[in-house]
Length: 115
Image (cartoon, rainbow, N blue to C red):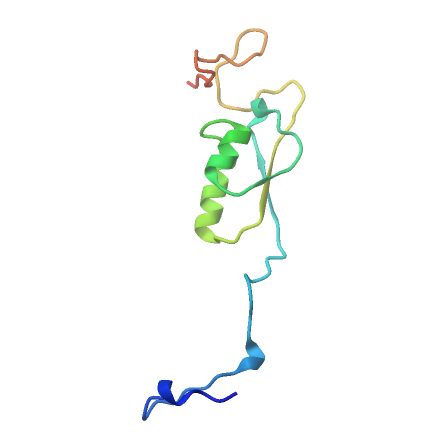
């Protein structure tokens, strides 16, 4: 493959190596699984999370999954992540106020009331 005469610069070595051509995004063969304490979300099977807004829609506003994916994307913008809530019978692990029956106390707009 020759370089067109119009782009040659005197005194500057230019090389075109077509053998190392890469197309598309680099392969990301590793996956990350976030195990969160967002039990009130009811998300007990792994789901793909791509950004904070998507994680918050699946796990609730200001969820641990949302904060985890935000940090992961900041570290590696091509991260392939899934999240799941940890299900423990009889244990309430999400930081929220609960009634005596164990139900979460919600505001009028449906948001969790946290201490």
